[in-house]
Image (tube, rainbow, N blue to C red; front, side):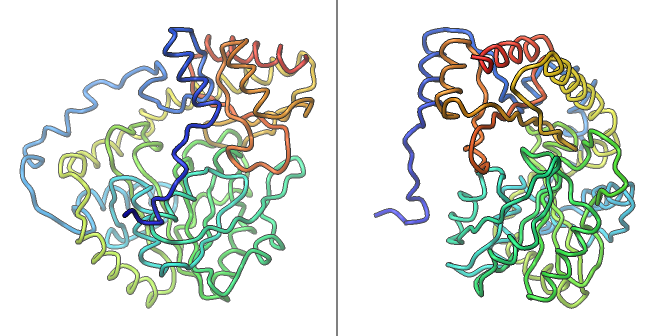
Length: 388
């Protein structure tokens, strides 16, 4: 009766089941996986939701690509980062997940393939599967920092490949694309006639200066490319569902892509009017809204470094940006055993590396967003466990 594309394994994994049992019993949990800024105890901006109540938000004027004033606000945001884009190159969505769905519809027929980075966020398998698209991964290399591995990408390409997905900075690796890596990707995509899809949702959160960093792919090169972002991360507002895709590349391909995306978007009309009307005011306050997140992430990262400096077998894979940190720990037990023990015996929730398809063991993935006191206590418990 049901489609193969929804034939997912719906059984909870052992960690999810153990967490549900613990919470049902009322046992406390220090959640070091928390990435929801609305639940992280951050200072609230004043009158944040007032633009949603503007008189213009009461009406309904469907625009497939999004309201002009909202797209112009996104274009101004790109301009503020050094990328001059016409608002007509911007497509609005309710989320970046939806943006992926639109792009997979645009680029792929059922059975076609997209390449995604490994390690990486596990949502790609679901998003592609729901479009009847197959995922193939390409391994990132690590030599003290993460790099694109040209040989790994070449090996992953097949005649069915329609797009390469790059995440900059990576989630959870925190690695940005570098200028030379972007140039190689653009050249490869142009040569093979495939698209580059760049997830840039964490791009506004660098953790150190680096002149090599490619701020965005939103430039006209020889390859058709798409730059994805949204209010969820850039303004810390996941409750206001607004994301975007910037379309760049050769004019002929760009125009055809936009025409087809407009038809896809017109079939759904997913974005609410109030958030589009509010977008210019919200994006104008982006730096203000980012400030408490930047301070929280930087403070927790410093606390983590200080805790690790005391000595011990755990090491930090230094992030370049984003909201996550990755610890390499001794493989004296499996990642699953370790995270279950941390939850059961220490009351701390962390993610195992295999959730993100890390190569081998053993890795722990932590969010840098939890409240500082909880974060420091949680880290102390994690490091106490690691020495066992």
